[in-house]
Structures are given as C-alpha cells and as structure tokens.
Length: 226
Image 1 (cartoon, one colour):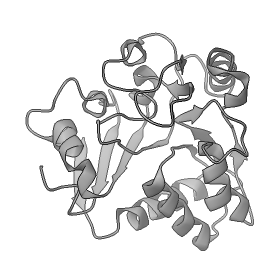
Image 2 (tube, rainbow, N blue to C red):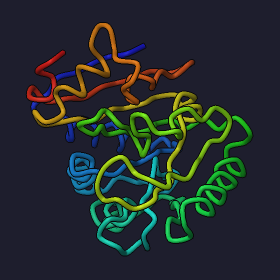
Image 3 (cartoon, rainbow, N blue to C red):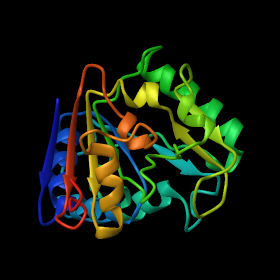
Image 4 (tube, rainbow, N blue to C red):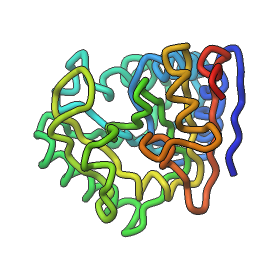
C-alpha cells in the first residue's frame, strides 16, 4: 500500500508518526538531511517517552559522531539528547571506515532483529537525484541482494566521504516506510520515484516493501511533478 500526502509542513506530520511509534516501543530507523532535522526538532518538543523504543540509522558518513557531517550527530543534537526518556540508540560507527562499519552494523542488526531483520518504521529522505539513504543512482550498492548493510566507498554527491548504508533488501522488509520530502529542488526526483510510471533508475522508485506500506509526505513544491 502506498499513500502520498501533500501537506504544508511534512516534517510536523512525520514528527507525529515518529512519536507514536516511539511510544509503542518500535524499532525506528532515522535518516539524515535538513528536512528530517526539522521533524526531529518538532518531535523533541513533544518530549514523549521513547524509553521502550530502539533507534537505528539508514546511513552514515564515515566521520566521528561529533563531526558536523555525522547523521547521528545531527539526530542527537536535534532529538535524542533533548528527550527526557530517550531510546536505546544503535549508532553506525562510521569512524571505523566504510567496510568495517558496515560489517559491525550488519552484525548488530542481525543480533537484535534476526536473519530477516524487519524494522517497524523506517524514515527516508530523498536527494535531488532520487537517492535514498546512501544508495545512489548507478552505484553498485543499489544492486546488493544479500547483505543488510554495505559500505559505500564513493558517494554520489557531497560531502564526498565514504559512507555506510542499509540496502534495499532490508529497507523493503520494513513494516512501514515513511518518505519525507520538501522543496522544489526535489520535485523532479519525486516525480521520478512516485510518478506513473516510476523511473527504474531512481533508487527511491525501488523502495517497495514486500509486506509493508509506504507513506509519502511532501509539500506542494516537492509534489509539483506528480
């Protein structure tokens, strides 16, 4: 099932969904980017009880956690450190390098979620090139079929540092995938991903949970080419 919702403030809509999932003790995957950061800040203001939830990450840059480019660092500043009752946090150790970090995170995912890991709520943004997590158009990582986490030696956009990312097989096992997209610079990507027909070269178009749902939250500018 896929539902596209055009709202004035998609970040507020997603913040509400993150809060509800956290209160239910869900396994939640957070992502990077400026639009998700706004959603995290709104969720932090609610200061709900996240203590039964577990937070994971869709991808990470291979930098220390206190580096300005760290996705964990952004989420920590905007949300996690501001919660009175924070969740258990499973950080991608990007500072280990892309291959070592991918191996460590895959082991962590399988330790806690088994050999067929299934997240409850997986949040994704989208780049202007329709990339999701750190799965970029034309890069080999998007073709991975067996691993849950892979290293990305060469990113498809700035910052040009190696990365670690969840793969399509584990993304497509999620119970719910929420897309959060805003801004006119994303309109073409949204059209490629969710238009009729979708563009198979767009990584976002290949997010199709086998037994789950997709909810797409966009503002009017981002929805211009749907």
